Amino acid sequence: MKKGIQAKSDKEIDEVIVLIRGAGEMASGVAHRLHQSHFKVCMLEIPHPIAVRREVSFCEAIYEAEKEVEGVRSKFISKPEEILSVWKDGKIPILVDPDGEKTRRFIKPDVFVDAIMAKKNLGTHIKKAPLVIGLGPGFYAGKDVHIVIETNRGHDLGRLILKGAAEPDTGTPGNIGGYTVERLLKTMKKGVFHPQKWIGDRVNKGSVVAVVDDFPVMAKISGIVRGLIREGVEVKKGMKVGDIDPRGKREFCFTISDKARAIGGGVLEAILYWFNR
Image (cartoon, rainbow, N blue to C red; front, side, top):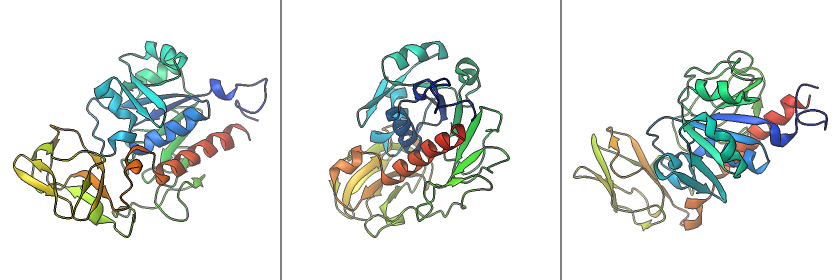
């Protein structure tokens, strides 16, 4: 058995350190599941992250100092030396450290998870930790990471890939209530984003949900505003800035999605598989 989790004489679960690159929706689903399973979790972000599903994204702590998602809190800190005190408080530390090297050298993680969902590898390599996991396309298990987690919706969502790559990105969002691309709110021009509605608001088809400068961003379907980027963000033409949930259940705006939970479960399985062999 490798260094790990199973035997009392080896490292216990609550001593296993997991460093997650990214703190958006999917990364936060992973972090939440691992935190609830008593792993020591630390997250990394860029200076100005843009999240659509802000109410379930720990990266919002960078703007608000702390962010709570389903009873778990993340706390923004400025240097790795503060990580231990945040763990002691039962929270997830989050730092601005895009490539993670400074933080990685300090905490020496047992597991490194690339969860930025960039659909390509932006510098992650298999020597970053004893176990390196990549979410979705862009990684090759056995080459630049040890394990890949499938992120495409469908039969294999959350599956461990021990050799090879995940399915290519389809470019089509998941089907919710019979809608795919219609759910998305996208900009028609470059400019500054100003919301006219808020996450959790009910809207009708044709409602103005936001404006970019003075150009409207309108809902293509009726439902609940499930996600919306922050006020004042500089956006590009065609950029995704929000989404509408046609199911109409407001509570879904503030809870982790089935997809994020499945991916989080896949990462948890990967850790247990790897260290308990």
